[in-house]
Amino acid sequence: MKLLSQIKKDLEFNQALFNLIEVIKEISLSQYHVLEKQKREFGDLFDCLKNIFTMISLSEIKHPLLDIQGQQAGVIAVTTDTGLVGGLNLSVINLALKEVEENKAKLIIIGEKGKFYAQDAQVSFVAFAGIKDDECLKQALELRDYIIKEELELRLGQLKIIYPYPISIVAQRVETLQLLPFVLTEFKTKEAFSYKELILESSLEDVLEYLIYLLLGNKLYEIFTLSRLAELSARFMHLEESKTKIEQLNRQLRLQYHRQRHELIDRTMRELFGARLVFG
Image 1: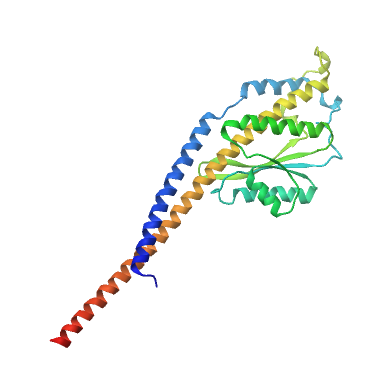
Image 2: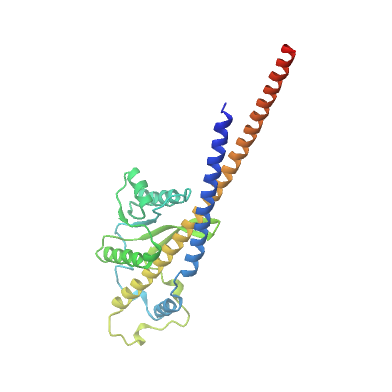
């Protein structure tokens, strides 16, 4: 049984830890809302780019970004560099490792935590630095350039990305998205024009490659931003759960403290009355 002095020290330590967690939680909440407001979007520009696909007949185009049969599949796992995100990183990397095992896919990891998990699983991988808010777009374009190079040099085929998606500040889920081959059916409309009606200075293959180049960069940037939001959301919830556990522990310690204090008082009073009876 703990001494009263030790219980009191534990209570004081837990209260200090509780206050620290509360501060970190509020910081995560603030970062989430700031990043959500600062998130850059290219909606109008990329709506225009997508509309160009309505004028292209893809069935007549032969290009490595469309025809990737027989090449090694790839999977990108987006993890974080920091902790306090619960099991979010583990969920992402487990899905990625499953893809590697089932499809013999090449593993590409974003973030330090994913690297540690992959090393423990003894799986080879290509690593990129974890996402930073002020370099998010730059990092997305660097990954885009690497992917395009690997695809054009026929070292990479079908490509998926697994990343955390923020439902809200209190909920997240892990998403899997196929990036390549580039699926354009959703851009088709009944008013699609034949490419023969267009005046082109470049070949259709070059036009298609450049459009995919732009759209892939935009999609990766969007995913990176969402992943950072999901990370902050997961940290907020993990800290909230930690606060609840500390509150429960402190409640138990306070009960133990008061019970032992009352027992000590009772014992002291009995000893005093006993002494009075003995010494009259």
